[in-house]
Length: 618
Image 1 (spheres, rainbow, N blue to C red):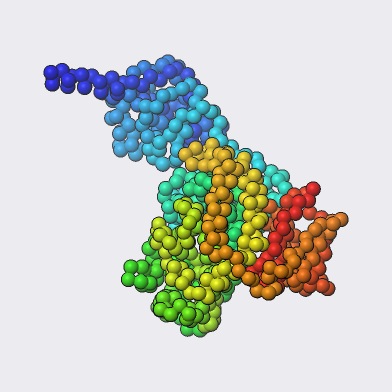
Image 2: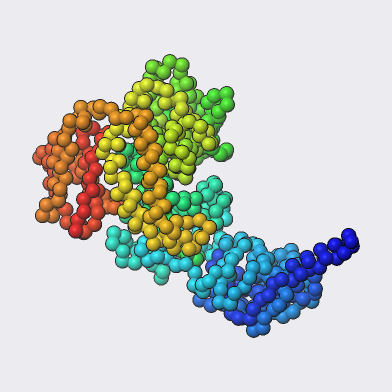
């Protein structure tokens, strides 16, 4: 009986390994990610010396054609390979041949598979990696840009793959705006411009095929209306399945709460080496610059004691880094501070940075929370704003990693939290806790700082101003943004079916619903407080109107400045300073902008409470 069972098992395995039938017909192979110099279809038997090699014909847009003139019945598996093996039959088993390709010839191929083949379908590898998995898709053409956003085209030198986060490779780029309103094309297909590109990120780099990149232009440019610079990031947000709203709303909250500088982002579709790789977010990177973190830069390896007080740009990090100092925060916490500027420290710089943060920690952990000594070293105003942004977003990782802090040159200059960056873990849990309560990844400093009564009082003022003046406009901003990127998000989801936002607007609404639940909970904890007299509850809000091509703003509170933004958050006209007007409570300027949605922001003498109003020009 045991012998019979063994024979039946062997027969069953044999039948299972010979279950692939390949119909006659035409098939296609998408070579846009693998970039094989030639493509050959290799298939055969498991335990019989019968394997076949068939060359594919190159077509347009890296689409190669496979013609099977006769069906191949009872095969085991197949692979697509960049191999020098000649066409025809090989008198060896398929497992031996595929090992010979990989290990003896050191040639590239896709992972072997026995997936059903349907004539007319296209085999699409998931990545350009050796032994990449793939799937058959019912299309000949690949996903293409939506045509609703500008497209950035990047071509690396020799179509070299981007595999490093440390080493830049040479490339060229151009941006085609396709005549879309509000955008300008940069360069052209015939005359592309030089840049360098490398990978970036940690988890987002290692765990997703849709990779984020760092780019450095050879010459500073105003890309898609952003401030002129050489340095940008192309953020993939492959882990954001809530309508790409996490960073979008996080950055908008930073602007609403008047952080000193907030990185701007613009959605763009990206074609890399001829391959459409989806919707990306071209984003200003955090660096010391007059138009970004505007402080005095500090030299690498500086030894002059008068110059090591700033400028510093550091980051509370959750990864070990060679450019890092570590401070013991508590017996169970080590504060890791990665320094970005300067990039290389002399011994005296190392000592200064470490002593500064040892002293900050000592003051923050003071037993008497009526002690305001820590405020002499940390800018409480910016910290409160930074903290409220993170609470509204329930970004529990905000004081654990990607937490930037800077300090200008000068012995009495304070450490300033910001700019905001990376909301990848925002609103990932329930909405009934402060961010420092049971954070998944741990936290630094903020749970202790939150115990200071003066900090809490100031936080409530910042929160009240946000709730009254900025929060009412947030849904409109989210709706406008999700509408703007909806078609591109659908194309992105077709390109990356395992993660994406094909139903962009619904997912955006779900995200905003959760944010509203967190705001409601915070309202229950903090309520609303009396604001300073200049913005108290009895003050009449400014009147904003457009009459006969003129923008008029009237206010009972002195006006400091007026800003006008389009629906994408870009300045739609030059800021209006009250210094250029005879009255501090009445502003009237020409406003001949094209039809669309605009946000008018009125900054009063008290910076805590900017007033914002949505206007529609028809």
